[in-house]
Length: 262
Image (tube, rainbow, N blue to C red):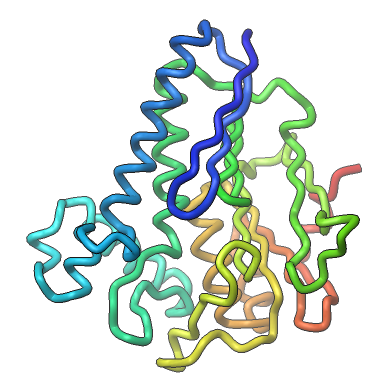
Protein backbone atom coordinates (compact mmCIF):
# COMPACT_ATOMS: atom_id res chain seq x y z
CA UNK A 1 0.00 0.00 0.00
CA UNK A 2 1.29 3.45 -0.91
CA UNK A 3 0.44 6.56 1.12
CA UNK A 4 -0.96 9.54 -0.74
CA UNK A 5 -2.21 13.04 -0.01
CA UNK A 6 -3.74 15.62 -2.31
CA UNK A 7 -5.22 19.03 -1.49
CA UNK A 8 -7.59 20.61 -3.98
CA UNK A 9 -8.70 24.23 -3.62
CA UNK A 10 -12.26 24.59 -4.84
CA UNK A 11 -15.55 26.21 -3.75
CA UNK A 12 -13.61 28.69 -1.66
CA UNK A 13 -12.14 26.00 0.58
CA UNK A 14 -9.68 23.10 0.62
CA UNK A 15 -10.51 19.46 -0.04
CA UNK A 16 -7.90 17.05 1.34
CA UNK A 17 -7.75 13.43 0.16
CA UNK A 18 -5.35 11.29 2.20
CA UNK A 19 -4.83 7.60 2.77
CA UNK A 20 -3.29 4.48 1.34
CA UNK A 21 -3.63 3.17 -2.22
CA UNK A 22 -2.95 -0.28 -3.72
CA UNK A 23 -1.82 1.45 -6.91
CA UNK A 24 1.32 3.29 -7.94
CA UNK A 25 1.54 7.07 -7.65
CA UNK A 26 0.63 7.70 -11.30
CA UNK A 27 -2.63 5.74 -11.19
CA UNK A 28 -3.49 7.02 -7.71
CA UNK A 29 -3.00 10.63 -8.80
CA UNK A 30 -5.14 10.04 -11.88
CA UNK A 31 -8.00 8.66 -9.78
CA UNK A 32 -7.85 11.56 -7.33
CA UNK A 33 -7.67 14.09 -10.18
CA UNK A 34 -10.84 12.57 -11.64
CA UNK A 35 -12.49 13.01 -8.25
CA UNK A 36 -11.35 16.62 -8.14
CA UNK A 37 -12.90 17.19 -11.56
CA UNK A 38 -16.24 16.29 -9.97
CA UNK A 39 -15.68 19.03 -7.40
CA UNK A 40 -14.73 21.56 -10.08
CA UNK A 41 -17.78 20.70 -12.17
CA UNK A 42 -20.04 21.24 -9.15
CA UNK A 43 -18.38 24.58 -8.44
CA UNK A 44 -18.77 25.69 -12.06
CA UNK A 45 -22.43 24.75 -11.96
CA UNK A 46 -23.52 26.01 -8.54
CA UNK A 47 -21.25 28.91 -7.66
CA UNK A 48 -23.09 32.21 -7.26
CA UNK A 49 -19.68 33.92 -7.36
CA UNK A 50 -19.16 32.90 -11.00
CA UNK A 51 -21.32 35.13 -13.24
CA UNK A 52 -21.67 32.56 -16.01
CA UNK A 53 -22.54 29.57 -13.85
CA UNK A 54 -26.00 28.09 -14.48
CA UNK A 55 -27.00 29.02 -10.93
CA UNK A 56 -25.96 32.66 -11.42
CA UNK A 57 -27.96 32.77 -14.63
CA UNK A 58 -30.92 31.28 -12.77
CA UNK A 59 -30.58 33.89 -10.02
CA UNK A 60 -30.66 36.68 -12.61
CA UNK A 61 -33.78 35.21 -14.19
CA UNK A 62 -32.04 34.49 -17.50
CA UNK A 63 -32.92 30.80 -17.45
CA UNK A 64 -35.43 28.53 -15.75
CA UNK A 65 -34.58 25.44 -13.72
CA UNK A 66 -35.70 23.35 -16.70
CA UNK A 67 -33.15 25.15 -18.89
CA UNK A 68 -30.29 24.45 -16.46
CA UNK A 69 -28.28 21.22 -16.50
CA UNK A 70 -30.33 18.34 -15.03
CA UNK A 71 -28.16 18.27 -11.93
CA UNK A 72 -29.60 21.65 -10.88
CA UNK A 73 -33.08 20.14 -10.71
CA UNK A 74 -31.59 17.18 -8.82
CA UNK A 75 -30.14 19.50 -6.18
CA UNK A 76 -33.35 21.54 -6.06
CA UNK A 77 -35.24 18.35 -5.19
CA UNK A 78 -32.51 17.36 -2.71
CA UNK A 79 -32.88 20.69 -0.91
CA UNK A 80 -36.65 20.26 -0.80
CA UNK A 81 -36.18 16.88 0.87
CA UNK A 82 -33.90 18.33 3.53
CA UNK A 83 -36.28 21.23 4.13
CA UNK A 84 -39.02 18.72 4.86
CA UNK A 85 -36.75 16.51 6.98
CA UNK A 86 -35.71 19.47 9.17
CA UNK A 87 -39.22 20.87 9.56
CA UNK A 88 -38.25 23.88 7.47
CA UNK A 89 -35.10 24.86 9.38
CA UNK A 90 -32.96 24.05 6.36
CA UNK A 91 -33.76 26.12 3.31
CA UNK A 92 -31.97 26.79 0.05
CA UNK A 93 -33.93 30.00 -0.58
CA UNK A 94 -32.15 33.15 0.57
CA UNK A 95 -33.91 36.17 2.07
CA UNK A 96 -33.66 37.69 -1.42
CA UNK A 97 -35.56 34.67 -2.82
CA UNK A 98 -32.48 33.38 -4.64
CA UNK A 99 -31.87 29.65 -4.83
CA UNK A 100 -28.61 29.02 -2.99
CA UNK A 101 -27.97 25.32 -2.26
CA UNK A 102 -24.52 25.93 -0.75
CA UNK A 103 -25.82 24.39 2.49
CA UNK A 104 -25.47 20.95 0.91
CA UNK A 105 -23.65 21.32 -2.43
CA UNK A 106 -20.15 21.17 -0.96
CA UNK A 107 -20.79 17.93 0.90
CA UNK A 108 -22.90 16.53 -1.94
CA UNK A 109 -19.99 17.06 -4.33
CA UNK A 110 -17.50 15.75 -1.76
CA UNK A 111 -19.56 12.59 -1.33
CA UNK A 112 -19.66 12.03 -5.10
CA UNK A 113 -15.90 12.59 -5.34
CA UNK A 114 -15.24 10.13 -2.51
CA UNK A 115 -17.53 7.55 -4.10
CA UNK A 116 -15.57 7.85 -7.34
CA UNK A 117 -12.30 7.12 -5.53
CA UNK A 118 -13.93 4.09 -3.89
CA UNK A 119 -15.26 2.83 -7.20
CA UNK A 120 -11.74 2.84 -8.62
CA UNK A 121 -10.40 0.54 -5.92
CA UNK A 122 -8.98 2.90 -3.29
CA UNK A 123 -10.86 2.07 -0.08
CA UNK A 124 -8.51 3.27 2.67
CA UNK A 125 -8.72 7.06 2.76
CA UNK A 126 -10.35 10.13 4.26
CA UNK A 127 -11.71 13.29 2.68
CA UNK A 128 -11.73 16.57 4.58
CA UNK A 129 -13.92 19.09 2.79
CA UNK A 130 -13.19 22.38 4.52
CA UNK A 131 -13.68 20.87 7.96
CA UNK A 132 -16.47 18.47 6.99
CA UNK A 133 -15.01 14.97 7.13
CA UNK A 134 -15.86 11.72 5.37
CA UNK A 135 -14.28 8.37 6.31
CA UNK A 136 -14.03 5.27 4.16
CA UNK A 137 -15.06 1.95 5.68
CA UNK A 138 -11.67 0.46 4.87
CA UNK A 139 -9.49 2.71 7.02
CA UNK A 140 -6.51 0.84 8.42
CA UNK A 141 -4.91 3.63 10.45
CA UNK A 142 -6.21 4.06 13.99
CA UNK A 143 -5.45 7.77 13.73
CA UNK A 144 -7.72 8.25 10.73
CA UNK A 145 -10.75 7.18 12.75
CA UNK A 146 -10.17 10.16 15.04
CA UNK A 147 -11.54 13.54 13.99
CA UNK A 148 -10.78 16.86 15.62
CA UNK A 149 -13.60 19.39 15.96
CA UNK A 150 -12.24 22.92 15.68
CA UNK A 151 -13.10 25.60 18.19
CA UNK A 152 -15.32 28.41 16.91
CA UNK A 153 -13.27 31.40 15.82
CA UNK A 154 -14.61 33.55 18.66
CA UNK A 155 -13.26 31.24 21.38
CA UNK A 156 -10.20 29.76 19.70
CA UNK A 157 -6.89 30.70 21.27
CA UNK A 158 -3.57 31.17 19.55
CA UNK A 159 -2.36 27.96 21.18
CA UNK A 160 -5.20 25.55 20.55
CA UNK A 161 -7.87 25.36 17.91
CA UNK A 162 -9.29 21.92 18.74
CA UNK A 163 -12.48 21.77 20.77
CA UNK A 164 -12.74 17.97 21.00
CA UNK A 165 -11.53 14.79 19.36
CA UNK A 166 -13.98 12.03 18.52
CA UNK A 167 -13.25 8.43 17.54
CA UNK A 168 -15.66 6.86 15.03
CA UNK A 169 -14.10 3.41 14.95
CA UNK A 170 -16.53 0.72 16.10
CA UNK A 171 -19.45 3.02 15.27
CA UNK A 172 -21.76 3.28 12.26
CA UNK A 173 -20.83 6.94 11.81
CA UNK A 174 -18.65 7.91 8.86
CA UNK A 175 -19.16 11.66 8.60
CA UNK A 176 -18.83 14.90 10.54
CA UNK A 177 -20.16 18.27 9.41
CA UNK A 178 -19.91 21.58 11.23
CA UNK A 179 -21.91 24.77 10.78
CA UNK A 180 -20.82 28.09 12.22
CA UNK A 181 -18.66 31.03 11.30
CA UNK A 182 -15.24 29.36 10.91
CA UNK A 183 -15.29 28.94 7.13
CA UNK A 184 -17.53 31.71 5.78
CA UNK A 185 -18.37 33.99 8.68
CA UNK A 186 -21.98 34.41 9.80
CA UNK A 187 -23.83 33.35 6.65
CA UNK A 188 -26.75 31.18 7.81
CA UNK A 189 -30.16 32.82 7.73
CA UNK A 190 -33.32 31.99 9.65
CA UNK A 191 -35.74 30.46 7.12
CA UNK A 192 -38.68 31.01 9.51
CA UNK A 193 -37.96 34.73 9.88
CA UNK A 194 -37.42 35.86 6.28
CA UNK A 195 -34.77 38.51 5.85
CA UNK A 196 -33.05 37.77 9.13
CA UNK A 197 -29.79 36.00 9.89
CA UNK A 198 -29.83 33.13 12.36
CA UNK A 199 -29.99 34.42 15.94
CA UNK A 200 -26.67 34.59 17.73
CA UNK A 201 -27.66 31.82 20.15
CA UNK A 202 -25.01 29.39 18.95
CA UNK A 203 -21.40 29.66 17.92
CA UNK A 204 -21.21 26.26 16.24
CA UNK A 205 -22.97 22.95 15.66
CA UNK A 206 -21.13 19.74 14.74
CA UNK A 207 -23.18 16.75 13.58
CA UNK A 208 -22.02 13.16 13.23
CA UNK A 209 -23.98 10.84 10.95
CA UNK A 210 -23.61 7.88 8.62
CA UNK A 211 -23.99 10.14 5.58
CA UNK A 212 -22.07 13.38 4.96
CA UNK A 213 -24.91 15.29 3.31
CA UNK A 214 -27.31 14.36 6.12
CA UNK A 215 -24.80 15.57 8.68
CA UNK A 216 -24.35 18.84 6.79
CA UNK A 217 -28.06 19.54 6.32
CA UNK A 218 -28.89 18.95 9.98
CA UNK A 219 -25.88 20.99 11.17
CA UNK A 220 -27.04 23.93 9.06
CA UNK A 221 -30.66 23.53 10.20
CA UNK A 222 -29.68 23.24 13.86
CA UNK A 223 -27.55 26.38 13.70
CA UNK A 224 -30.49 28.27 12.21
CA UNK A 225 -32.91 26.97 14.86
CA UNK A 226 -30.65 27.55 17.85
CA UNK A 227 -30.52 25.61 21.15
CA UNK A 228 -34.06 24.29 20.65
CA UNK A 229 -32.56 22.03 17.99
CA UNK A 230 -30.84 19.94 20.67
CA UNK A 231 -34.08 18.15 21.50
CA UNK A 232 -34.96 17.79 17.82
CA UNK A 233 -31.63 16.16 16.94
CA UNK A 234 -31.70 14.04 20.09
CA UNK A 235 -34.84 12.37 18.80
CA UNK A 236 -33.32 11.41 15.45
CA UNK A 237 -31.82 7.94 14.88
CA UNK A 238 -28.20 7.46 13.78
CA UNK A 239 -27.17 11.04 14.47
CA UNK A 240 -25.34 12.84 17.29
CA UNK A 241 -24.46 16.50 17.71
CA UNK A 242 -22.27 18.84 19.73
CA UNK A 243 -23.42 22.44 20.25
CA UNK A 244 -21.31 25.42 21.27
CA UNK A 245 -23.62 27.98 22.87
CA UNK A 246 -23.18 31.72 22.56
CA UNK A 247 -21.40 31.91 25.93
CA UNK A 248 -18.96 29.17 24.95
CA UNK A 249 -20.67 26.45 27.00
CA UNK A 250 -21.20 23.03 25.43
CA UNK A 251 -24.37 21.02 24.98
CA UNK A 252 -24.88 17.76 23.13
CA UNK A 253 -27.26 14.99 22.23
CA UNK A 254 -27.33 12.17 24.76
CA UNK A 255 -25.04 9.79 22.87
CA UNK A 256 -22.37 12.23 21.81
CA UNK A 257 -20.20 11.75 24.91
CA UNK A 258 -19.68 8.11 23.87
CA UNK A 259 -17.78 9.33 20.81
CA UNK A 260 -15.04 11.24 22.64
CA UNK A 261 -11.62 9.73 21.95
CA UNK A 262 -9.97 8.11 24.94
